[in-house]
Image 1: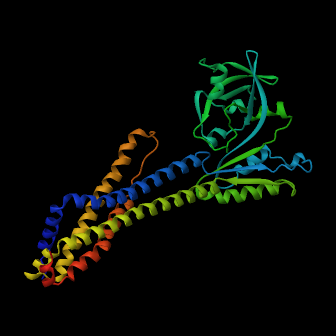
Image 2 (image 1 turned 135 degrees about the vertical axis):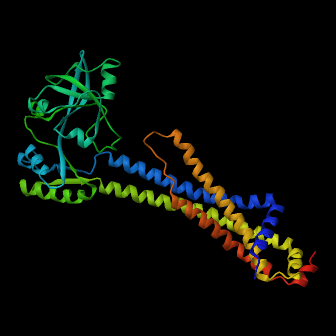
Image 3 (image 1 turned 30 degrees about the vertical axis):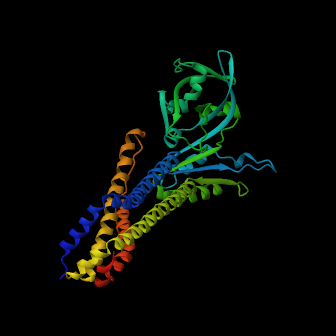
Length: 399
């Protein structure tokens, strides 16, 4: 029976005798295993951040706009209306709807004119677009119903027009109408151009847009599904509903975030795979280094192997001794590398925004350890078998 305790003890003593060599040999494993943990951590963090940014454009959002045709005039019956909003809201799994219409406008304050983007919004717009009210308040039901001449402006526009002054309660002129500023807002996140809101936007109750356009038609219709799983169904039903309510010649573009989210996930997965392949290459190189060093070690310790065989050590004991050395080098390097790979995200967490978390995947830790030990075992087998095949007599003659 092979004495495992003796085999492991001999292997550890051999590594102690060559500490510097063992540490340098394990350096590649340390880098490779740390890279696997860090790559997966960075991939998960970036994927989570990008997807949360995209989803924050509008939770489970479906939006519709009429396709504008330049070759022929389009009748008023093609346009989206407030009645369409009510019809869409009745669709199962739709929890909120909103409509908007934009118009280039000139803002006048203290005799100074500025170009702005005037946006008329219906009820539900704040909920769908997740607007943050930094000062004042949002529109209430009476503002919409009574066509109150009130507005909200973006933080950028507030800084440009009023500077450090409080804009709440101040009057601004938009065309022929004078509005009272009741709030300052911003979007919760950057919306990648998918929103009506610009830096110079002013939002007013949708009911007042008739004063400027002469009609109450909606340019963009937003619908919020109850769950992400309902988006596809709502998408299909909204298209069918609008086709049934308008002439057959009318065309509408129904869009969702599904395609964008899918593209983001695909890009994230591709980058993760590429980075993991690079990490595995680092481990492969370290494995080759382990094999080279162990082959040199076998060459240097030929006489020692001959002595052990002469006093009764079996070939498999010699082989297992060198395999244990190889696994200790790779396993020790894996543990150090994993600790480094975990310590870096934990340390950087303090420098990141409070809403961004850096998740360390337990699976990446397990994979890094298993792959690193397997690398040591695989590349250590050839030197170990080479040592086991040495003849005792020839080994004892080796100088």
